Each structure stands twice: as C-alpha cells, then as structure tokens.
Image (cartoon, rainbow, N blue to C red; front, side, top):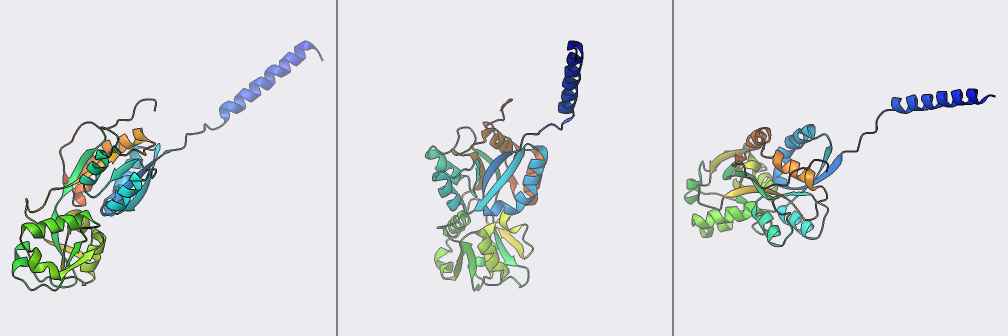
Length: 273
C-alpha cells in the first residue's frame, strides 16, 4: 500500500469521525438546584408561584422544604443546606441577621397581610365582626399557639390591645400553626378563629368575617433572604427579584397578600456564574 493511499484513508477516517462528532446531540448542563425553606402558610401560593418561576428560569430546579418558621429557623441555625428562607414574618429573618446568618444585601420584604376573623362555611357564625367579641356568647375561639407560631403571637397582641384577653382567655383553643387553626374552625371544634388573610383566602371551608383594626397588632410583613448555608447565591437572587415582578405580585394578591413597594439591595445573578 502506497504512502498516498494511507494518507487518503487517514483523511477519510478523520472526516468520518468529525462528521460523527458533529452529528452527536449536544449535552445540556443539568439544572441548578435552588433549595427554599418556606413557612406552611405559603404552600397554597407556591403551588402556582414556583412553576411560574421555573418556566422563566429553565436552568433552575426548585426544591422546597415547608414547615413552621420556628422549626425552619432552627434548621438554618444548625447548618441545613438551604439557599432561601421565607418565614411567616420578616422578624424571623431579622433574628437570623443579628446572628450573622443572612447574606448581606439579600433581605427583602416582598408582601404583607392582615389578621382576620374567620368562621366555617357549614355552620352559622355566632358573630359578624370583631366588635361582637365583646358581647356575643362564644363557645371556643381558635388561635395559633404564641409559643410556636407567628399568627398566634399576632392574635395575642390583638386580644391584649382590645383588652379582651382576660374576658375570652378561657375560650381559647390553640393550634400549633395556622393550618391547625383553620382545621379547628372548619371542623366545628371552634366557633371562630383568628388567622392571616393569606391562610384563609384559599380555604373553601372557611369564610372571612372581619379584619382586625390597623394598629391593633404589629404589621404583618413577609420577608425573604438568602442564608449563610446558601450554595446557589445567583439563583437565590433571581428568585428574590422574581417575587417583586408584576406577575408574581398579582398571583400573591390572589392569595391574600398585600403589595409592598419595591426595594433595592438584593443579590443579582452575575454574568458567567
């Protein structure tokens, strides 16, 4: 076999290999995982919110851990692998920030809500407004446990402000968190209850009777931040920014959230990261 023939065969083989390589499908990078720790009260809104975020961020796969804010806070303090924290009140982020466990510049208030008086849809309510609490005969009032839930702390503030605590305390039945309060009312185990509007608005077994007056408790703000265990800060910044987009805010309002003015100072996704 001549040298020219060998050279020709080598060139043909190289051409065939090059064509084969070019024809192979390109390997796409696996989506980045963004781990979010969120309060139980956000579950209903997130069923719609997270798919919307992922649809606009196809390189990010969201993993959510739901729980009480107190439990999630403890997990973050102990080093759980979490990127973004969304508790039921922004004060819980502030507590972590004081301990140096929040990434600087990522804390945001993205929504608010109000404390509302609720009753079940199956039975007639003994009252129609918070003012009726002073005079109506009520068997049981469901509220969150102030030791385990932010909604319980806010309800306690309302009863203290309205000077009804001593009058009604013997009628309180406690739920560990907001969903437990909703269940007590929906099942008729309590005549009425106090929860956040965000807890009640999507529950078909519950109706909202009235709203606690402004100033009767501390304002209820929902906060978000990237925490010290975050492994995906750029994606965390994308999610935090997403919460302030018109589409996200409109969806949140459908679930009982109040709009908050946009803020500045959040981690951004950097080009090339």
